[in-house]
Amino acid sequence: MNSPCLICRGACCETVAVPFKSIPQESIDWLNMHKEIKADKSGMRFETKCEHLTDEGKCGIYEKRPQLCRKYKIGSPACLAAINSRRKLKAPILREIRLWNDNFVKYAYR
Image (tube, rainbow, N blue to C red; front, side):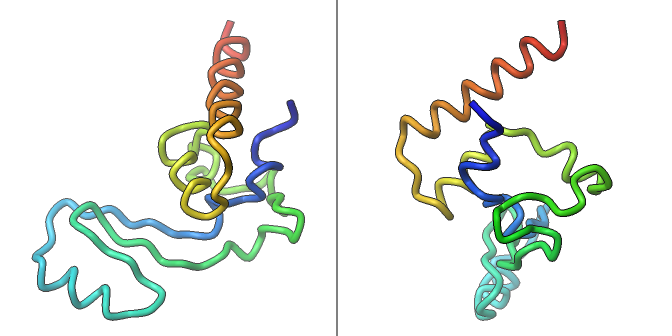
């Protein structure tokens, strides 16, 4: 299987998430009044596509991408949540992506 990123076409690159340690409900309610923001007790998400995501769903600056992007793990819960919320892929494909990550980690770090 090729990289799972080619299947989901960069679902993780279409949202910016900012975690919260603690925030009053009133602030969450205010944030949610804004169209491009979704907030809850854990943080807020901005619906905005990375300017380097190509039409093919690839990273246009892959070799020079920021450290934050490098740390994002394919097949992680965050990855699968992004795919599920944006792409509505079938369960077998999500399992395949999870397995791809497990196998990559298993063989890359021998």
